[in-house]
Length: 175
Image (cartoon, rainbow, N blue to C red; front, side, top):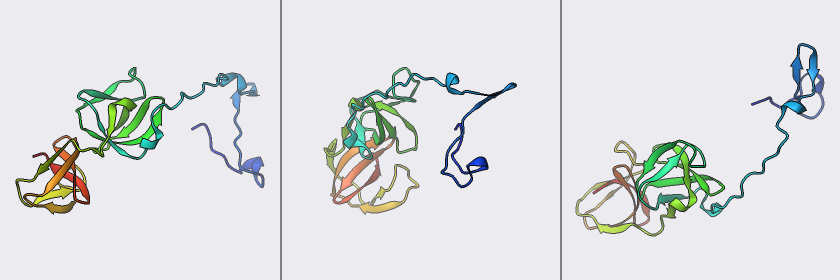
């Protein structure tokens, strides 16, 4: 932050604004020569903006999540196929994603698929399987799944599957 707008000092009674200046031992000087005057336009967004605020899954094994939107940034983690990520922003051909454990990073837009089509469908062989609200054994329980119930696996994170069971979606321990 360089400064904040306000109405203090000689701005009292006027519209909020910001004074920006550079002061040397000889007094105030024009700050314009100190500012990069080359305006670089932002890259065109080639990632689908319709995916913003949606949950998607990693499309293949070994996709890197980076600290920034380019492979020149350090890789944060290698994501296994099926890993779920919430799309929170788009820039160029990259998405900024939020993982279920709270970590942020960037992945290429071509590395993600929608979760509408399940990875697989199974019938539960066990009874009273807790459906959780996040991938954590201490998470809140949304429901109890019953033996013979059909579920759709939509994605994964670590030792958990994100599933759809009827009208409910949530997390279960991988079977």
